[in-house]
Image 1 (cartoon, one colour):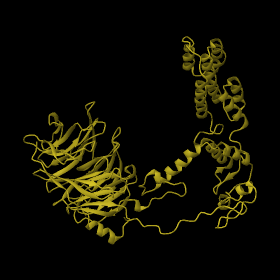
Image 2 (cartoon, one colour; image 1 turned 30 degrees about the vertical axis):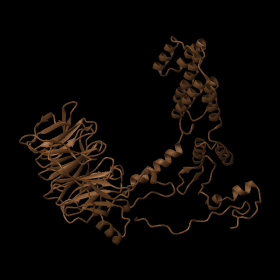
Image 3 (cartoon, helix red, strand yellow; image 1 turned 135 degrees about the vertical axis):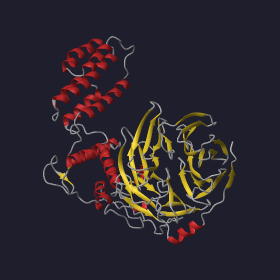
Image 4 (cartoon, helix red, strand yellow; image 1 turned 90 degrees about the vertical axis):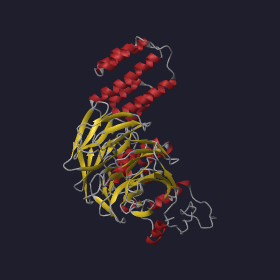
Length: 589
């Protein structure tokens, strides 16, 4: 649904005639001419345009319109890649046809000697290679002679090994620590002779080390062309303001540019099962469900079907006050619901049944969260304390600290080390549970909510002054980016990370719109109208880059997707989006 079918027939395949490049449509033409003419007249040759080439010899000649690519280096990288891909014959043909060898003759001889274990000869050849300074020569000689020493030991030639150490390795006067280690190995002699396979394997490692040690102009690095191409794609990806596709969608055939259409900006479904303002919503970690909570004293678990549309799975009933939040357990098998200043309830996702109720006499919860391992819960209470229970409801900790306000938001990092909470009007506490040490984020204005990034390295902080700030919380906390444009004057508005590698910031707003910014630049890139009341909370699917949800005071949840539908088709889909579900009541356990 929503996909425009391609009715054009595919291009007919045409067999190539060996004489003129193509055969007749009947395919009855005979094969004429030599095999060399078939290569010369291939379709690739007919389509290829000669590269712009400068004057000069092969070592100084450049190709490309900007004159910065040396032809010899370009050809050698292609040759190196062909050999790495296993196309040895093709690589050899390119060396022969271009007249540009992969390596200079001395280098080829040197590498072959290393492969064959001709250590004395390889040391001599090494010194005959130009482009090497004395430091590189000594370091490479040490590697070669060390391997010679080890192989002599493997074959029980202790005297020769000792002579190599004394007369060849020690005079280099480098890596003294390793020389002592080699000398110590003479005391513990090997019990069996080394095998040929061991020698081949260790020589391959020596070649790898030599490749890292010697200049790239002498030994072309493995996968160098691959690295250049990857870097080019990554630069294009990072420069794409609207980038929101998987790396598998990148192509070498054209420069990458996503465009705004990759941002979920079209309402694809409206969920209307709540009967009052929707205050909170959150996708499950596996992306299969969405949970929402409302002023109507209920929470709903929505299931995402195979076609991407949502249906009501369970309606969780039992709270006597508005449900301020609903949070997924680390394994997505359970959710917590927080009844405003009432109690916290734990629900089973499969059955929709209430498993346990957490409450404390005389005080109620303002916010709640899960332990990193899912084996306990944390809560910010009305008396400004933070309480922690195991799943069976046994209180493990309860502490207040220097708190001057109720804890409006609370979270624990995935490693269980840091407890993050609002401790004062404009201060967030980062409490190290292992070291009992507290770091503070001090803002200039009142903090209304925060959100942790998936990697736990950043904190998104919403302020009362209509500004959202991104803090880095690795080491000393510091502000990274600021986001402005949304409206907030009276209500609690929540924002979130989202998109490819959480490269975007989305937020609700009191003007009934959803706002999306580019995370690194802070640039506002899209405003999404549609709701008829303040948008209180947004959540971006962690598994579907192109799905986002928003909760509003108009009592609805909007599901946002890509702009692929025509207006009349979209409206029909929206109207038909209601779904039936099972009602679950909880009286508390």
